[in-house]
Image (cartoon, rainbow, N blue to C red):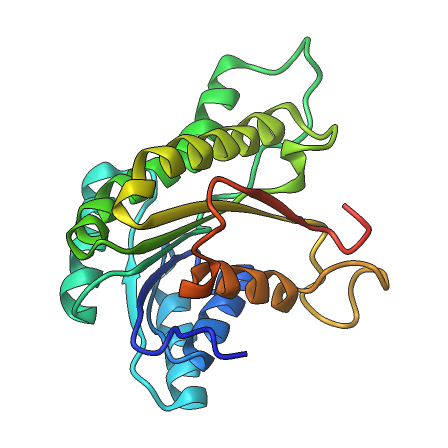
Length: 234
């Protein structure tokens, strides 16, 4: 199926490894131009070089901190200017969530840290990207959440991923009239290689394929949705 992504400009946060890296590969293979962004500058350069060598196209890499508003704004502006536009934002770059805590020993600081790193971090990226999408009358925002939003998990993990769902739903209603869709994808227990996970665990490629579809013009009827990729697990 032709997803009509040729020439689309995409930012992928957390794009240097794992799910974000797989999304970058999939979007590039569909003809999109991508900027991968993350905190680790060395890993970013290596990942961008791999993508360039594999696909024979330039790949932009930008190091930033999702918890720093100025860095987020500068990252989005740089990506827009160097790519020559911005059509797609993949919010995937959040630090790992906190470990499991009981109700009695979890701290307020742990909750706030997790919200800042993911829910508010995604909001920062969205807020910076939206003006460029509105000016074109078209855009796609995909927020990568987690099954902790649906299942009993850690308190901080559940709260921050549930927050991502709310963020997507509210922004989808706010931005729909500008031709911008916003959706959440919840990966289950993803196995990155064939040696890890069980038979019914989704791969990073499974997640990337769904994200690519949601990015495409043919998915214009889907917005505000929260979609699990658990392959029967999760």
